[in-house]
Amino acid sequence: MLPYFLHMKLKTILISIHLWVGVLSGLVVIILGLTGCVLTFVDEIRPLVYRDRMEVASTKETQLSLQIMLQNARNIWGKNKPVSALEIQNSPNKTFHFRAYQEDSNEGIWYWNEKKYYESLFMDPYTGKLVFHEQSEFEFFRVILYLHWSLLFKTDLGQPVVGIATLLYLILLLTGIYLWWPKNKKARRVRFWFRWKADTGNKRKNYDLHSILGFYSLSVGIVIALTGLVFAFPWFSNGVQRLLNIRTQVETSPVINTEQEIPIEKPLDNILADVKKKYPDATAYHFYFPRGGSSVVTILARYESIFKTTQAQYNVISGRLIQASTYEGKDGREKLRDINYGIHTGSILGLPSKILVFLISLVSASLPITGFLIWYNKKWGKRRKRNRKNPVGME
Image (cartoon, rainbow, N blue to C red; front, side):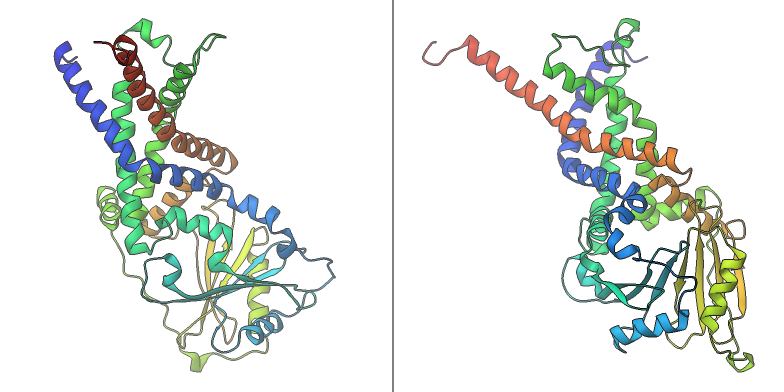
């Protein structure tokens, strides 16, 4: 225990730090908290909002050939916009979602300047017709994602700002718990839960919302902030890897001799059939098509659990499986990346952890607001007291 006078001096210093750090980071923390709430349940919200483009009007016994569907998408975009990826939901009433995107280094400060184009085609797999053509750069949930990722600035501009705000948020949590911690048993009785009565004032309610919700969100808030820093700062990610004794491995693409591959008529259809046979209960299948002369197509069999998601690579000429990797087969760096994403978004344990992250993100967004109101009430409360003691025109 610190001597009383040292405790009071430290408390005065920490109050100033808590105040000014909150002023500097408050707006960004609100944005990150609110966008985090949306992104936590984006996989559940998007199908409801975009039902008209993600679901087909009617289904048939068989779908069109994947080769035909791919060619239809290529015909719409033309040679200047090659198909980059395809998402197939493991449900008969869902459209095929084709993507075409190309990175760019245009001048400008906004995240839109990082893409030459980014478009999506939602197509009916039974008729081959276009259901919806989306300009994905301006799609609502993608804008929310980049607002959370870099405040809609280019990554190299916005990510440091987000990272610094996250560091400041950590300081707020740590200084806040010290300032909040009750001095004795009597204080503890009123610090851990809301004890509002009919005559409890708004100032007291606001203070309780700030301090009590801040206390209960502390541990999870710190975890969310730390996992966010892994995305924001390479030096922090590297530091975590060193702390956990994880060595970075150099990624190498499999060497494929295309001369030895025997072409088949519909390789993509064979690949899709093989993937569905191997992973029949996957949520969706993501195809990432080769570029730059490569003959390797990468397929992600996605599950709700990151520990079950599997990545496979096939030869796009012969349809032959080259290699497949599960979570257990990944190196430490890849495992850390997957776990970090799952923890940060709340998806690691399914619905319960998503709800928890949603609630903590909502509380995090509220703390700068309730904190500002505490400061405002104290400042203007003191001014009103001085005015009552010294009315205008009186000495």
